Length: 116
Image (tube, rainbow, N blue to C red; front, side, top):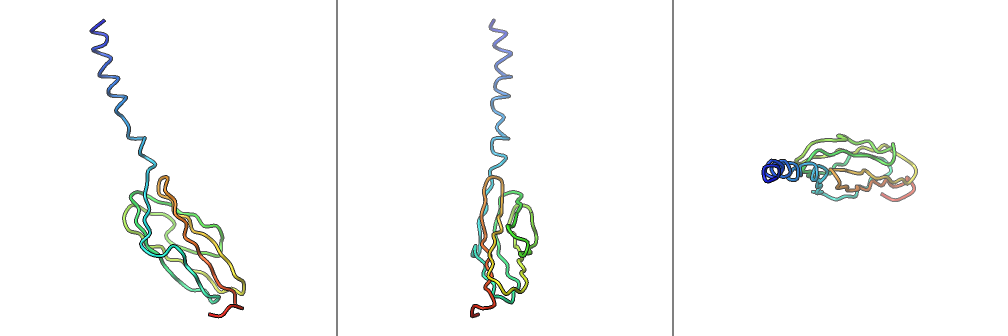
């Protein structure tokens, strides 16, 4: 019986100490600049920077917001956001996701009727 336990103990320790997958989804995003971009009705280009500790992806809630890149790797990243001219007020969100961490970046655009 002692030999049986002696052989099972190393197997138990080997499998119980493998926690690599427990931390696979933990990520962290830190924004280096404002998390809200406001464009006038004429459109234009703005950017924001952030840091991620692992690979990241992004989504956007509306098609009038163009941005690049849409994904990347760990380190400091800069996203360039471009919007075209409009006569209407509009708003959308770019969501950055790194593992289980998410940050929303608000993008708004004034209507042509609002003062610049």
